[in-house]
Image (spheres, rainbow, N blue to C red):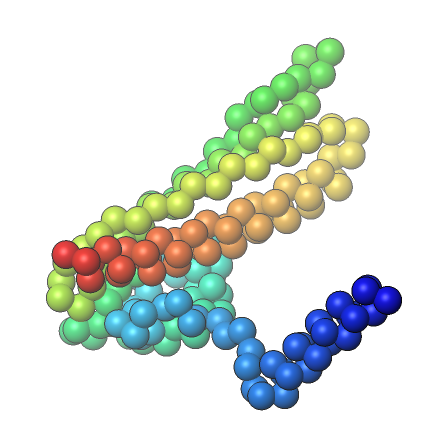
Length: 167
């Protein structure tokens, strides 16, 4: 009886909110000053640049060509590394720690530049008996890490804007 009442209550709330047009919106946290910006990278077609561009589009940021008075998000440096974390009895690598670091900067419309960075770590079990499957799995992990680093950069970019307003 109590479960059915809770279920009915939850269904009513969801139906009411969806009927009135209320929806979660991407980009709701992005301040107006950063809704339009320029994105720069040493390699604009790299996988990291594409991941950042994708996340900016998901957050409804309008990307424009460089113009005076428009904020700029620039990727300065990207490094990736894998370290052996453990080995099998016969001395072969068993587990690795994959690390992705991205350093970027945000130049605001007033000309001030602020550095931001993101670092993502993942562990990867490397079984040499399934080399082809593990290579594909490693590629998927790197893809996810780039997406996570891009989300971190956008979050830091937004929080940076809030810090600047506090000055």
